[in-house]
Image (cartoon, rainbow, N blue to C red; front, side, top):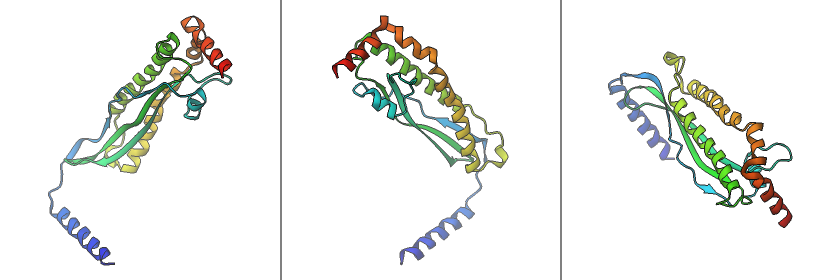
Length: 193
C-alpha cells in the first residue's frame, strides 16, 4: 500500500515540473502523418489454399486462393515532443507474402502469382505515401481520438485500392496464364492428394 502514496507524489512532482516548463511552440502542421516503409515481406511457399482462405484470401466461389499478402496496420496518435501538435503513425506489422505450395517455385505459375502479390506490396507502398500526405481538416480542434478516427477512415479509403486490384478480370487471367499451367498444377495436386 506504500506504493500508492509514492506514485501520487511522483505524479504531483511531475505535474509541478510541467507547470514550470516553458510552453512548446505550435507545430506546423498541427497534425503530422507519418508511415513506415513497406519493406519486401518474408515469403512462405508451404501453405495450402485453405490456410490462405482462413487468413483472408479472396477467391470467387469454387475458386482456389493462390496467394496472399497479410499485414496488420497499426495506427497511433501521440503528442509531438518538440512542439504542440500530434503525430499520426501508420505501421505495417508482421507482413508476409504467401504463394500456395501447389505452385512450386521456379514454375511459370508461381512467378505469375508472385508478381500479382508483389503488386499488392506496391499498393501498400503507395498507401503509405498517400497516408503521409494526409492533412487533418480541423487542426485547431484536433484531439487524439478525433484524429485517430479520421486516420482510420482515410486508411479504409486507401485500402480500397487493394480490393479494386483483385478484380474478376485479374483472377480470370489465372486460368490462361502460363498456357494454363495454374489449373493443371491444381488438378494434379488434387488428384495426388
